[in-house]
Image: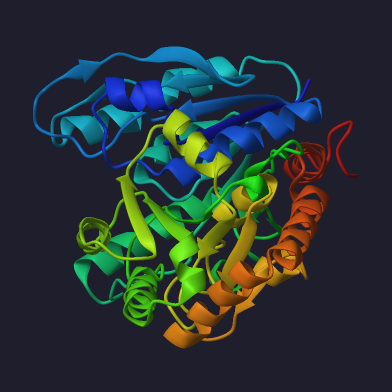
Length: 396
């Protein structure tokens, strides 16, 4: 039996709240849990092994390790303490007894690392000594750290140490990341879709537009804010029939708070960081999902906006900048923004509002495209071939 151990920092809602963590990434957690579940469709026994940590608050609160399930995937959370230094040391060493226990399982074994956390190093070293296959899941190649600074040198050292132990290559968030790493072989993985064919969101009035995740300038927050202000000033009839739902957190969140508290149309609703249940409710009434990573921005080419797969899976029309591998995945199943221009963005909103049937057809095409590339079965097969290339059931 093939076994996959996904080392990461994914968090489910209950654990996040229990451990008083406010610095998690919901999109990353969702991708990790769904990819692990997809692996199981290919007959791989997968475990998520999470550090279960966030920025420590100095309270000294200690949380012991625990085992739970997210969907059909068993999740092992390492212990965590809200104290500086000790918190990092605890994460560094807590992996080791688990790797030792996993090494006693029969059959091929692969350790998959979500990005390059220093806390993985000892676990990765022991895994190699125990002849595990080791693979890096590289999600982000962008960095604004000066390589000549101490932080830059530290980052480069960590990168070299981790990469030297990843003998099985790298899963990439997008094709362009292959140029940022010497690891080979590589394969792009855009996440997994959960198709909901019974979605009734296109029958809902008014039109709901969702912007969420990292609410920052690089993610297009200021661009969207300026567009909403311009629409309020011009007051076109079609814009009065739109509501902008803002979820997540980031440096621009307070600017959306000001918009939400200021009367005007289109309306803005600020939700901030939501629970999974609250977010599902917002998705259920949304018709347009925004991905506004700026052209030529630091996030443009070396990351993939995983939220677009989530949108398409929920029969939500993807309105996105033409960056990364989005067009490769969706083809004609999305509406693309070719420039960082307020009027260009507003014109796309106008067209959708005045052509709902045509917009609905594009949304359906995007749903089919997400299924073709990101269905659990297809992702599971890809993982099986890439992570277990020499084992029965994997590629020869």
